[in-house]
Image (cartoon, rainbow, N blue to C red; front, side):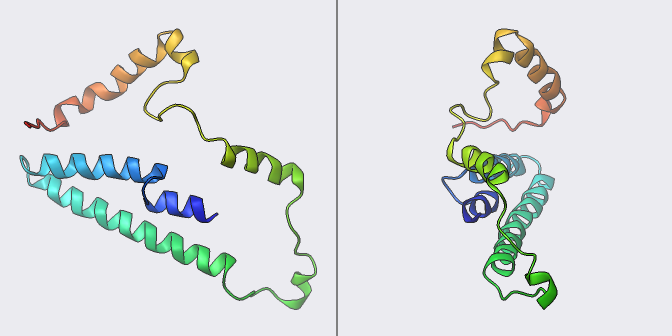
Length: 133
């Protein structure tokens, strides 16, 4: 659970870092040309920091804090059976072999993913910043 919490909090090298990093970098780069994007960047940064704070708080209260259930309810507490735990272990231990921005092989063979990606990203193309290195 801590790995998932760190991932959603945006800790490198976990997956949440790369998505937050791209969004924040694009908004900040666009902010040099259009100042309203610096406002968007600051709001997104604040949201990322609050996410990290509240996810850590959630984990500490839920798994490391004192038990707050009543005496009658504590008799019914138990671990999840293997039918639930097994698939979670498989999903947690077997990360995807492809980057998340690449389409699955089945879709790319059918030429569905490239046309879908163009249709989805075409309206936002004018918002991309022009970066000169």
